[in-house]
Image (cartoon, rainbow, N blue to C red; front, top):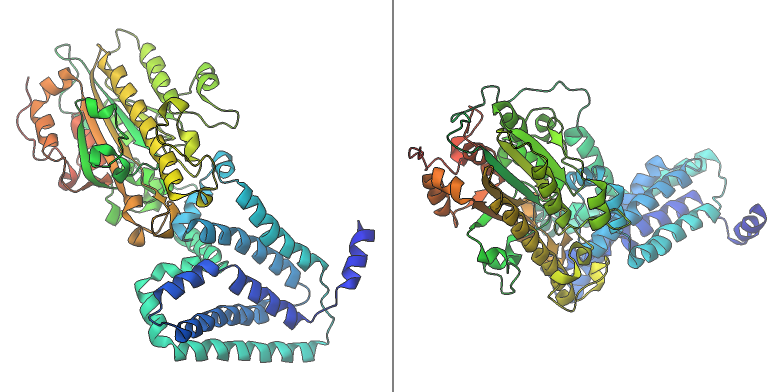
Length: 555
């Protein structure tokens, strides 16, 4: 190999460390951040030549800032090591920023830390491969082949000092010249810094580990130790069985139940459900929303560190006397189900519904629920809470989230390189995944309808929404403060069996009156416990949807 590499290296003219640092600064600062510069150009108040002058100044500020940093940290002995790391981090980060409009934040880092190999495979595409080859591998090859001239320390240090001062003066001068413009833009668009690679990943990773990374070996904090049933199970009434479906990446605006023009809910629309049209999520990513919705903390007070080592909704229900079971067709429960039963889906169902790469259609949850219910002894009177975690509309491979029988909208985007599809194709693929979810939810309700051993209830809500190109954004995970409604406005609906409705008629009527009220994930914890007849001081009544329903229950 050296016989091939060395002749090539010898043909490349050696460069100084200062030249190496400048080239690296230009590549990282100017080449990789074109989406950031496009955003800056769209926000500038100028027109014509002055707008281009402002854009050029912005490019120079970023390049000069990187060049200044490199004067401090890069020397001949470590320059290639640091450069290689920055090229890899910056190259891959820039792909998601430039291609998918993703803003890198601590929340995105948290989402990445909790992803799995299946989700990573879902991001692979020809576009990603080409980006990797030309914007990651080729620069790495250049770094490996280029030779840095040996220099005497004192002249080299002097040159680095001069370059650093010039870079600093350039940054300071341009920021001073356009201070009012930069201050106005970044004050109103604080997320912009999350578009500058690779500093966005480095800063967000440091912030994540400083503030959000779960601390190890923290003692478990008991929560809701006073939990009890206010209506003990008796032979007079059948026990309750609630199925809670945690959806994935479904947004409310794509549900025809909420007024969407395309009929994405052909089956649910025929059922006697309560549809809530104005519900918001706790976060914009599963890693945040799922722990938050089960924590008992409202979004404004949510502390992910506390949630990671404190009991939550499922523990409280279990303590009150419910048999709690989690059935997963996603990437896990993010710690919320660690202390309850986690149902192992039978292999024959995996063979029926799962692809070779491990992804399973959500109808596996329907069959799993059937199998689970069939295994309950006829004499078992234990009330039950079953949580089903969907694959839902998880992107970017939306076309893989529905079977052929539930793909009415054509043409579709049959690729995970969604930024290369037309808006119509992409929306059709996403909408098909909603149609499939509609079928799955309807099928689950049909299973509960036929159950004669329990009073059955059903509650569905998504963990967060999804962007499909609106405002130049794709997927999800944007910082909540600036996230579009597509990522935070989620669908939610309930269904109750005739027996449940008869025994709790005032509650059902009260819930129906709240169909258009502003609700959120904050309401799940106290409202679900209320529906399960659980009493606990942990239930925040301001978020209890049943607070208005204090009429005495029908005996």
